[in-house]
Image 1 (cartoon, one colour):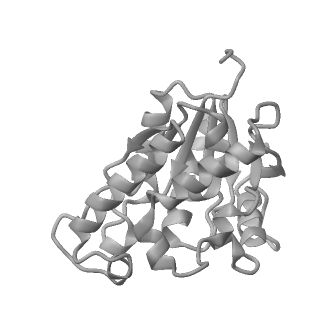
Image 2 (cartoon, one colour; image 1 turned 90 degrees about the vertical axis):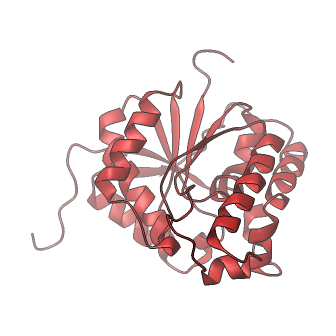
Length: 238
């Protein structure tokens, strides 16, 4: 890979988000890093509705099994797992935006990435938290190429993409439709096969979402190139 080729670092709120939303892209870029933010189990054993829907009897069992699923999915795409020590919202111990931003900045800065993909921040509070933290980091690491990816499944909620893009604009972040892999692709049929194999590795989440609940993961992926304006847009009347 040449020095000008993208070296991808994808920030994934949960174990499955990067593959569900960017799996075809990952299939084109072996050795991309996938950084899962909420990869730690709760400090104490607990039981949640989502873990039960996923087929688990406890949170610790869920995180252990989902880590294995994620390892298998990323291996199918030749991606490199990076895991952060934070807990997702269902475990009632979410980090602050500033804490998460500082940790993300450190891990991104220490990587060899030149292209960063972050969730747009759709619908789910964990996704919005991670996106907000990435927005804090973007101006400080503006030498990277930044892209936002629309999170599969959540992007189907009416109006959420438009609302989030408006929020980014208020923060001074311009979002332009674009693809990180515009000049580097593999055969689309092979992309689709590799992505489907990776998605199917998340058996517990397919179970929780139910029949056809993850169909959107196989729809075309959508990306936005992100850049800073000189200053954030002002709210009306201010």
